[in-house]
Length: 185
Image 1 (spheres, one colour):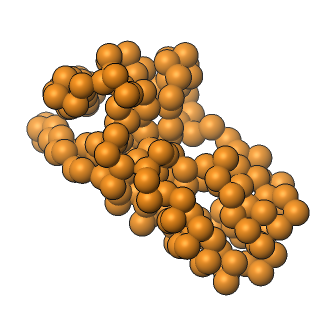
Image 2 (image 1 turned 90 degrees about the horizontal axis):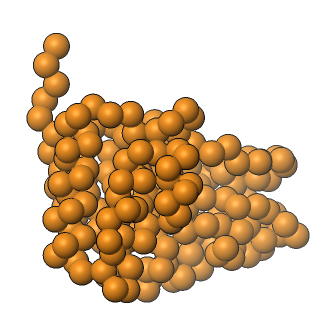
């Protein structure tokens, strides 16, 4: 059966240093995979490794059907955009494996409250931030504080602290009374 052509379309995000590339392929089964170091990408994702080796790219996040690219301070948007778009299209057209082994790193969720927080994030928060090319994951829960990691377009975004405190924290505290505060890691 013949595969349809690969389409890569550019979407701007609220973060001025991040672009989102939507694709007509499923890249990640669930959640997202975030990469900021070439060595980590080389061990887990050939696509992320190729992108992180492009001059001017400092971060890559692979989502369900999108790739978020974060530009370094010295990066040139014209070069980064053209190279990233071409790299994604060629990689997906070639049908190469996106991940080596398991696509996701396992997180250690050890308590009932962490399971509740994770479920809330998965159902209520992550789909919304993915629309802007970002992701939010639970790092840990300690003494009433949920420590969250903002990734992709959310990492370094000027509005991420407002989203975290005014949006996520408020809703999380309403849904799970044990959560007193949310902090970014």
